Amino acid sequence: MKQSRNGRNAQTRYGANDAGVSNSRARQRALAIGIADGRREGDPLAELKELLRTAGVAAAGEMLQQRPAPDPNRYFGRGKLSELKAAIAATGANLIACDDELAPRQERGLEAALDVPVIDRTAVILDIFADHAHSAEGKLQVELAQLEYNMARMRGLWTHLDRLDGGIGTRAPTRGPGETQIETDRRLARDRIAALRRRLTQLERNRGVMRARRERASLPRVALAGYTNAGKSTLLNAITGAEVGVGGRLFHTLDPTTRSFALSGRGCLLTDTVGFIEKLPHQLVEAFKATLEETVLADLVLQVVDVAAPEERRLADMRAVDEVLEEIGAGGKPRLLVLNKADLLAEDERSEALLRHPGAVLVSALSGEGVGELRERVEAAFEDTLAEVELLVPHAEGSRLHELHEVAGDLERTERSDGVLVRAKVPVAELYRFEDLEVAADPG
Ligand SMILES: Nc1nc2c(ncn2[C@@H]2O[C@H](COP(=O)(O)OP(=O)(O)OP(=O)(O)O)[C@@H](O)[C@H]2O)c(=O)[nH]1
Ligand SMILES: [Mg+2]
Image (cartoon, rainbow, N blue to C red; front, top):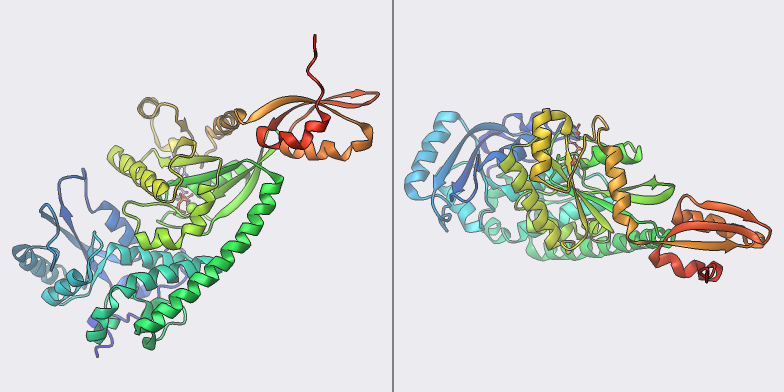
């Protein structure tokens, strides 16, 4: 059994280095390959290359084949394969990274033809996630996704045990916490998957408890959604004054973070969560369902877009976000488009961006520009869910003023001999709690 191909130690995880680049990866030089089916404009491999950069793998080159669909056995056609083989020799690449998720058969076929490890984009993304998961839940979610990804490939591994050390090191036996070679056995893997699911359900239930507690406070909830690196975490910080970690690479945030902020004195919750990407591997969406649930439960989704990205990139990002929101069941949520990184645009580009995305808010989470307007727009979005009421709070029930303030924010108060007359905007869903205090509409 080959311990290490191309002198690379596949057992090494890249460290907890925030920049995402580790020395153990420095010697991996990947040649990115993909199919140009003419459907995507611009550089079809841009995203894969960015993913590889985030994974700390050096770029050795790239190769595209024009064809309607990948070859079912070797991804590329025969002629292109020999071209690729020559390119590997010429560039010194020691890894092939494929832009599509490869069927196990294609992966094997490619490796046999090229004699270098082949990984697909799902493996790269799983690797980045494994590296960026910090919370217990995040780690379990990633492990689950990895195991499910590997399950499909285990039949191949069974007969090609040497391949355990191939690839980018993403396969569970070499990557997952506490994994050993014996666990390549499908049965053990299945047991582990079941255990992970149970543990995640448990965590989810705890989260449900926390959520229920929040719901009791019945604060309106806003969720940030958007392509990875669009600036969601920076925006969360700008709006709430929190200090959530921000990173210049893909998938910096994996764990959902919720912070509260006030709109006209009324509390709101803002949740930041994992970023999206085109063709987000299904295993990840599945494993991160609980995390993504925060988005499903929100009253309003702020879709954050990097407005400084080239137009085609931006539109692809927006499509990717649409797809994931749809997949997790949040497609129909009220949404507000936030064009972030306005500071990178010239004056004319700003007006152009707003023309192209009518109804969007232009902000810079970094400089704070537009964040005030964004808060107003969020408030306006909630305005429809509020009912203006006049309530009389008897002096003896003073504590209810506090209760009212929690859901209604700023109150307009008039002291009277029989109590405090309050004019407030109360969420319609909470009206029932104050029904007994309502002052009958003035009969005129
Ligand atoms: N120029 C500029 N850079 C920004 C702005 N907002 C965020 N950034 C930068 O964009 C990068 C990504 O920001 P994050 O807030 O981590 O992005 P994210 O959407 O949370 O990314 P993930 O957690 O990976 O999904 C960081 O380097 C930020 O400093 C902005 O308004 N202007
Ligand atoms: Mg983030």
